[in-house]
Length: 223
Ligand code: ADP
Ligand code: MG
Image (cartoon, rainbow, N blue to C red; front, side, top):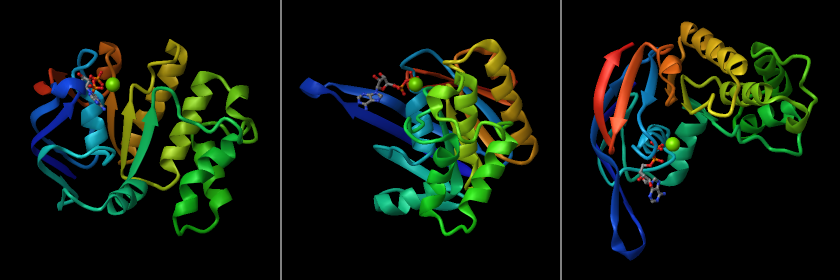
């Protein structure tokens, strides 16, 4: 599904200092995998995930998604692939505060040609167990419920790939367990899931663990 070949991402900081966010990373990801990316703070985990999701572009190297080479494309072309093929989940949920759970989940559909926007958003919320919270705004929901809204929003376009950056980082252990249960179910239904975590027990829930240090992959093993 995804092939990275010798991908580097160099950030230029003030004073001309260069930081290697990613340093010559090669990686192959197959459809249906459930992967945890782990490593110390600042090691390049988010840079890698952003690269995988077309939120950032490499300084050098090759990126293939579903057999097609990406690099130098116009940002609107990348945005189209992103919106259609990838769902994102973030540590801090990234929900719009002033609209309901249902309206948050409808948002990605506004840019799609799908009919029945409301019904699809309702179905996505029901699939994460929030059928009775659809008209609540984020501040009327617990952290775990807000993250489930964010997962419903990530799912509503039926992407093949879910990318999650520390999705349980702001949650208590009970809510974290619920989120992992949802990811496990989605993976069993065939979704490819790539999840950043720095907690070893959470990484163990994936089928493959990739460890990163200083922008490089230092191990890549089944869990
Ligand atoms: P992690 O997610 O593992 O904590 P990041 O991928 O966020 O690490 O960062 C990797 C390295 O790249 C760090 O040294 C960080 O400071 C640097 N970095 C990340 N994003 C930027 C950016 N937009 N500008 C400059 N440096 C960045
Ligand atoms: Mg990060």
